[in-house]
Image (cartoon, rainbow, N blue to C red; front, side):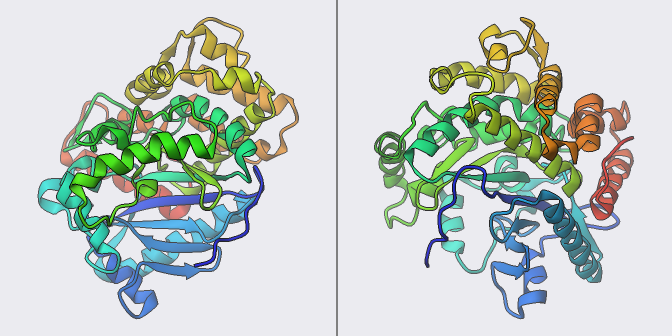
Length: 414
């Protein structure tokens, strides 16, 4: 397969959105992604290319991924196409009395009894993962995320991009958390998906590291330190060498040197494409500002230790936008004027600084970003909507509204 031509920093982005298939009445998971894809392809297959958007299978049969077919720059057009594809899929799923559901975790699925692994092409990789880790747990079969692929052309661009991405990762749950419930109850963490993501491969610790990637800024060093370590650690579990260290790597941001991109994996999926594309736009523009040394120098960015950033990430996984950040050096990275801030105050500051510089791209998503930053993350809004009533009826009622938000591409406000 020929690789697409490489592009430079910020010349296009790959976006991936994962959604659950659920019963329209009960909201129980409906594991028929293979039937959905067969409906379009005529046979069981993994990918259906529908113009700007491609539908793909995931590890489990109740999740479908919608992704940009190629790197895109025009997010408003992409948002429109994602929304169109959601409507198309919902129309097809109606014949099984099913529909798509957003958010990063199903609120009451029992993964131990309900998980069904993808059984068709490429499933030998899923089978070995299942053998090593038992993929029935929440951290495997009940998590939906938004992935962002950022391009780089060479080692110099990789260094700039990796340095900036590492610094932004701890703030992502404060913008994107959407998984406050599991097993029919609130978990106490606003980003429960990431809590599981951190530990679901702890049998082989080098696969995830500390989620925040190590301070490595060249292809050679990355291959020699991180990928070689993963390769040797998975070898005893993979005698037939079916797993590739490059895509086994599960840090929060993963470089793909073969195609020149870094994939960010720490964002919970939102209630609709408009919300996802708004959050992605703010993340991209923040990373862009860091690579342009708008807030601080590349040298200063490279000095940040993984442990310090991992501590901040733990705070936002638990409390999302309410996390109190009192690491003065971290706040100073973004020219924050105080010595303490909630994560939402820091995002508000970053947004205002970027807008002050005349950022037109962000203007298009002001409305959605104001809801996320002022009303709280989707997880926070879900918790507020659930209130004290954690009965199944109330949970179904709230999550049905979320399905409606996805179907009509609108924000969730209780």
